[in-house]
Image (cartoon, rainbow, N blue to C red; front, side, top):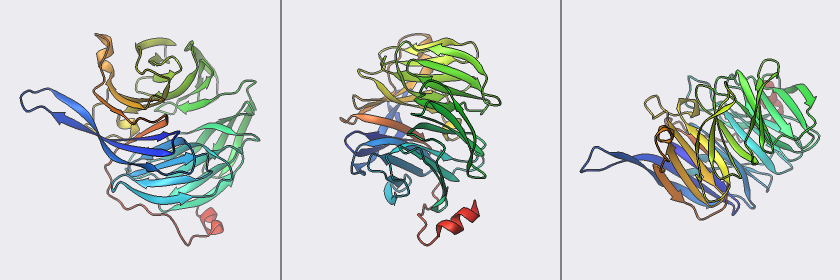
Length: 339
């Protein structure tokens, strides 16, 4: 399992989560071992994504940088956007350890759909008139949701490469996330989180986080992990609309990224399904065993200080040794026909 973090200082950080065995006891802890770190962008990194051996980062320099986690190397960059990259998401079919597509969103309201084998542009569309704040791909890979500065929610048909639904919400949402099963999706508006049925967007419940939500990740059994300006990690039970448990003072500054390290996040079958990673603008990345919250205030199982202002966090497994490539001689017309 690996964690990828982007920072305000242009650095990309890669870490591998490994078990640390103690020779004189049966107790096992975890450690975050560095994979790489270097200034990959010309300006601040805004978003990161990872799946299998592939990782990507987007920044204010309007570019997407690609990485091979298996070899800890840079693959190059994509330059199909003309505005800052605001959100990235891989789609990986459940039976594959290698991503099939990369979807990106930008500050001019555009979305790019890429094939991930090799990385070539399939389609560019503009579902919003203003900047897109976030996007989320359905587990089926057939559609995606986006929210933007125009206070609108859009649905994209990824098979046909066009917008299929658009509605005005009256408030600007900063986050949108599908749950792990794709039956529900969540939107964050300042300190409020709304839970919706994926089929008809009907509101199931609303969650009051009291302070602004900056990141969220879907867990198992209807759990939603949220973090933000309150410096804690809150696990919401979206079935009841109540707090399941909470890690108070998880960080000394605002929480900017949360990753649920389970099979749904690309982990191998025997990985521990109770691990959650968090990153803060204080530069610290921590890994937690959420079962400890039931008995006492948990201590992180692993921790690393990047000494930078972290802006985003993503997680992936390292199961595949398949070689990653960026397409060189594929025309845009041919790539569009492939979609």
